[in-house]
Length: 96
Image (cartoon, rainbow, N blue to C red; front, side):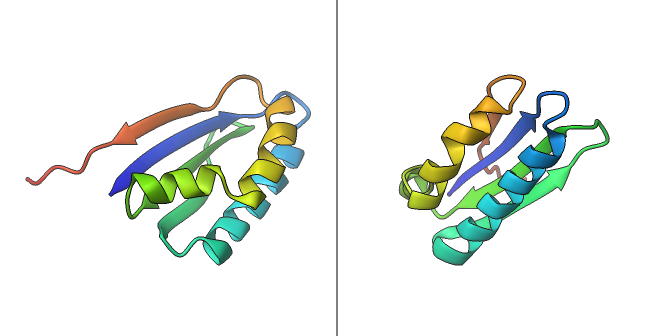
């Protein structure tokens, strides 16, 4: 299993455009990636900051997401509207 939490910050004035682009990406991911178990977009208390909770069956499923047509179409334009690079935290499941 591959799990990650991604924090994305929009440039000032681009919050709405980034939110719309991320929503469309989340919808396409859920519709076209059967090995993606969870792909949920969240608003944070801080304006213009979004979080994405991503759970994939394995690393190959994550790579399939990154190389998918919908990701490749959305990502370059989205990057222009971000205040910086996305912050990605990869999580490892642990038994308690």
